Image (cartoon, rainbow, N blue to C red; front, side, top):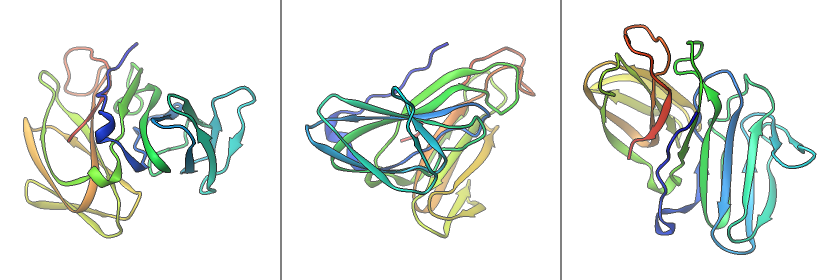
Length: 215
């Protein structure tokens, strides 16, 4: 089981992030990597979580906590329960950090036959955008697109038609079945595409799930 991730250069990193993971049963995860010594973190998880270290210290949903990392150190967080969604978790740091998020063994969509580890680097909120061009994975009947909002009252349009209004830290999901589509948001959003896996309806071949950042 494997997945691949983009790796942003340090010049492409930031100090504030909002996590997005896929809505599949199983354990969600995110990992923070420091680029400088004495980097102070503030984390507000959107679900009850564990620190993935000896002892598995627990943290409650919505309760901020902090800690310090030195250059090259990593800090990993995992959902306490397979039904807990980490999308909308917030991370802030006083120095640039890299953040990766994913799933221990996701099914895309939830409940199909096969699961795999998925991972993708997260983009800092100052790099979120409003306009996205999307293409469907060749040979598959559809992909799943998830859009996470930074502000309340964010309108989502697909090919010119309004499909949803979501608030800050909320995520909207739709299935992309056309070869291509154009997504517009009234406020900055993060957009990720999730490739279907298993014997999904309309897919003749078995495939493995994967996650892809849409720049």
